[in-house]
Length: 132
Image 1 (tube, rainbow, N blue to C red):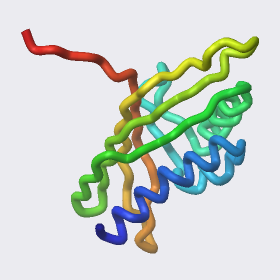
Image 2 (image 1 turned 60 degrees about the horizontal axis):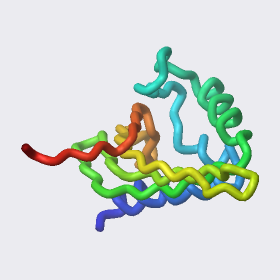
Image 3 (image 1 turned 45 degrees about the vertical axis):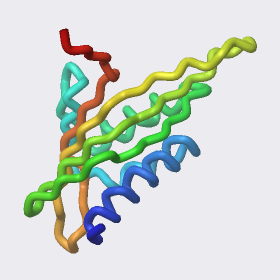
Image 4 (image 1 turned 30 degrees about the vertical axis):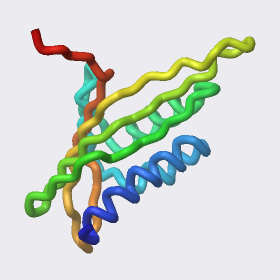
């Protein structure tokens, strides 16, 4: 595993830890000045807007994430990270928690100093497919 791959895998670990502990700053250190969230109706966000987005999502009670990068493809100063997000949300009242499995793709850019910043991302639910 290269140093770049280690950095990108650690980025996912830090996202996990930051999200699950409510530490928005721990997450935001991996974002550049602009981020494109393909899932949002208005996908272009400044760093401040992205920070506010995460603050709102993380304020919801009982959400826990587990982010696992499955594949990393590095081409020059771009990295493509495909992985799995396991999202668990407490249902409250003694009910079973809701569990959702998502797939994600992030595009990262190598910045000055050799570190990486996430610049594009998208995620969605896993879909079952059985060939006819």
